[in-house]
Image 1 (cartoon, helix red, strand yellow):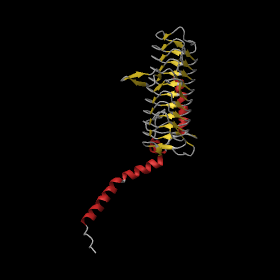
Image 2 (spheres, rainbow, N blue to C red):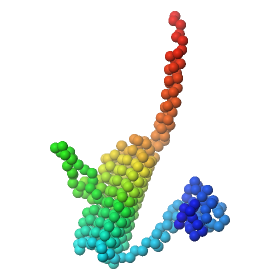
Image 3 (tube, rainbow, N blue to C red):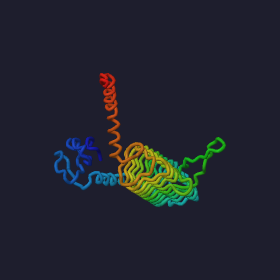
Image 4 (cartoon, helix red, strand yellow):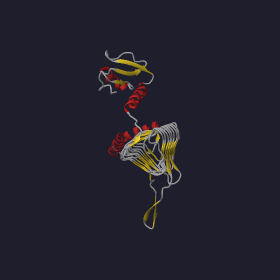
Length: 321
């Protein structure tokens, strides 16, 4: 598998966006997944017509990833497994340096990568994959087929302090994180445990690298949250919400189902679902674009006002009656 401009005769690629039509015309790929209406291509390239080339390519990638991933059950001698942990060594894989604490429960088919930590009484569902250095702290719950990329931390303490007698006193965070089935969480992303109750990530949600989700947040099903986003505590996202990169959200607000937040949007109040938002503070995209266009015209408007003022100042005074 390779990009159009890097593929050779032994590679497969895809044309999922018309912007890459020039690369497609010049590609040396052996085969390219294309939309059904694409009939012409490079002479030595086989065209595979599909309804959705991007999705089809992901299916191909998933196929080869499964072939390349060798799941060999067993516990490495350098792993540390508490006798009170619940797992079947013939059905899970635990790599060197991993630590599984007392009461932890690991489902069949799951793989615990090198130097991972599964805390006391944590629950890992079936067919999960915790990559190197991922941490699931005590009592947190992962559903089935959850993927944690390297360095992800599930259940870190929520950011809670109370000022008392001139000192910031830590407020204990005694809740958990609960993650639904088929969730993927990116490298070095952190999801805080609830102050009490649960921080929830809904099934099918995909979270990118370097995302921070605060305590007691509830993220709906099948959301997309892109890198460097920060979501403050007790915020709720509906289902199928898309959050682009570097979005910041205040705490204790709600974003409705199927809302889309453009990159660097600042969300300070609750937003209805089904709309595309941008800017700071967040507002419907078209309104924000109009406002930006008006701001860009301010410099010329100021010049015109100054010119008019100068003309008025230099004009001959009107004759007095």
